[in-house]
Length: 142
Image 1 (cartoon, helix red, strand yellow):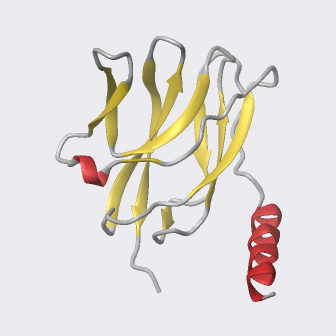
Image 2 (image 1 turned 90 degrees about the horizontal axis):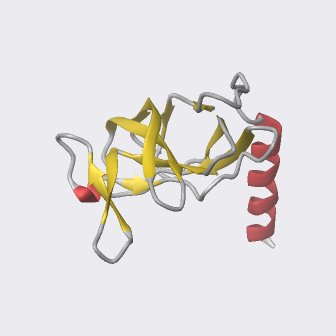
């Protein structure tokens, strides 16, 4: 019963806090975060806009992706970061014909308190490219 009340409370909080605004563009990818700072595991809503020529996802402290010999992609950490300080933050979001999509993510340990880079990546069948980025500060939890 308590778990059900928690789930309803989280859903109510997410629905009522709304997705962040972003100027819709079917030409230039962009995104907005609902917060500029967060605690580990706390929900952060985001909105993406861009051309409907792939899917979009967020990754933390990732500079780029390299294609391996087997055809899979492997993340390349941003300068000064190690692989354990990187995370794929979101599932793929398809912006569709209205050129807009939304999602929710949470930063997980072992990411440390401090400033981090959230990258917006566009995935097509043959490439993954970073198309935008923003700073996100992780603050001490309670």
